[in-house]
Length: 228
Image (cartoon, rainbow, N blue to C red; front, side, top):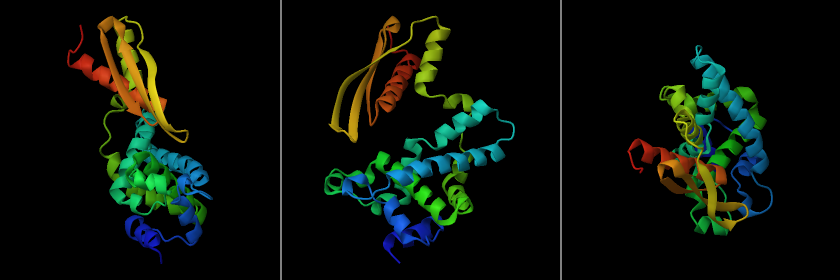
């Protein structure tokens, strides 16, 4: 039994019948050859379904909008990356030399993708019934920590609604810089609310993530009275 197989059994209580699937799930594209991108695609869909099912049962009074926000929160890249980091998944991800040197085994975007790929591998190996107890281990504790659904609206939406409620123009977003390889870029984005004299910048592994963080920082400034 490999170190990765022992980790999977000890941490998530699952023994992979097809060790090749586990190897593929833990192989980042930077290594070259077969990698985990296809399994990531599959695992993303499987995880979304399983989490939706958990939420449906856990919150019988929640409407569709609330359930959608809960699911988006629980399967976000940030949350999945944090879970994977806490589990020590990075110790078993197979990376190319460049990613190893740059600390890719700690990068949440890589770890989140690997966790989704792992879910995809478990699904192919044992079916949906094999995934359910694994997902329970990963997410059961987080179900009890979810805030009110209204608090889970993303920062861009909350900022837009706040400004609209005050009759103000919408914020302006702009990419101010980007760098990195095509498959691993970082974006710097500005968010400006000219009517309040507020602006903020943020970085992210995608334009969308950078925009969300910049919007969150603008909201923070509004709430602490940092505007003219």
